[in-house]
Every structure is written in C-alpha cells, then in structure tokens.
Length: 230
Image 1 (cartoon, rainbow, N blue to C red):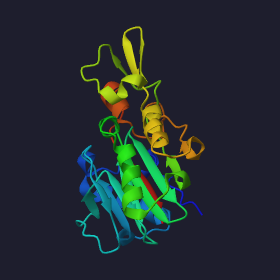
Image 2 (cartoon, helix red, strand yellow):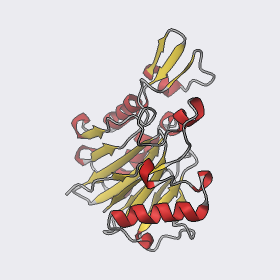
Image 3 (cartoon, one colour):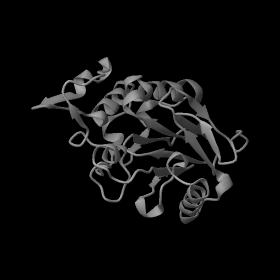
C-alpha cells in the first residue's frame, strides 16, 4: 500500500518556529500529528536551508528537542517512522518504492531544483537502497503553480537549468517549477504516469500559506506541514 502524505491547512495554524511563537507552533504540530494518529516522538521534521543534504532516518536518529534535523530530503525504511516537511510554495514531494519499502520526503524549491536535487535524490535511492526508479510512486503536494509564480522581467537571477521552464509574457516572467521538477525525475527513470501532482496552487488558495502571497500580496505568513508515514 502506498503511504499517502497528509498536508495541513491554515486552519491547523502556522507550523514554522521562524514565523510564530515556539509553544504555539509546537502545539500546532502536535495536534496535526495526533489528528493523523501519530505520536510526537514518532516523527522527524527537516529544517531546510535550500541545500543538498539527503538524510536517512531510523528511530535512533539524533534530533533536537523539537524533533528537527538539517536536511532537504529524509529517507527511511523503518516502519512507523513519520517524515515531516514545512513549505509555503515549494514542492513537497513524496517517493515510495513498494519493492524495497523505501519512503522519502523531499523539499524541492527553486534553488534545490536548480541544483538538480530531484535527480540526485533518485540517484541516492538507487545507490543506497537499491531502488529501481521505474517502481517509484511519486506524489507532489500543494505548491505554487506556474500561473502564480511570476516576476517582473528581466529576472535578477536565472538558473541555467530552469531556462527551458521560463515563459515571458508582457512584462512578466513565469517559472514552471513543477515541469522542471518532473523533467528531472523522468530523465532519472521515473515513469511520467507515476508522478501525481496536486492541483492546489498555494499562492491562490485561501486554505494554504504562501510565501509568494505573503511577500507580494500582504497575506499572512506561515508554513504548512506535509507528513507521511511508512
């Protein structure tokens, strides 16, 4: 059975310590986990810096008192481990291989996609867990869509790997992160029909936090949580 990710909404409250009171955020995370039948001590939450760190976790993996560790991708083969990721526009991507029983949760942002982290994640799963990319089931949660992700032309920073996914219309440049993300996975051997993309655009959804909407349209800042359990 494919472990399905669960995503919080604004109704669950902000999930980021950087954007809220520590005690309140801890309460929000605990309540969301409990709502999904998960105890606090069963989860691992990545602290993302738009880097390249891929970390394998087990029940014995060291974490801080908030159950966090530095990573962009968490991987496990231990039943009962819950992986958590905080986002507000980036692509929260879950990988599951039913053959090797390998589960991964990844933070794919504009920066990490430009750094080819989706492709590197597939290589990591192949190398360390014997995963055949053809067997992977991929689920992408709520994220910013191309129609919302626009900037005045010209862009100050243009990553070479993203150039094929830019569209210029009038005075704006649109960035299609999902297509750039999918292309790397497909090139690495994941069948296109096994990649499921959320139709929810965080930048326009009234139920999800969005970094883009908070910085460009004065919407309330915050982070949603994606959790998935093996």
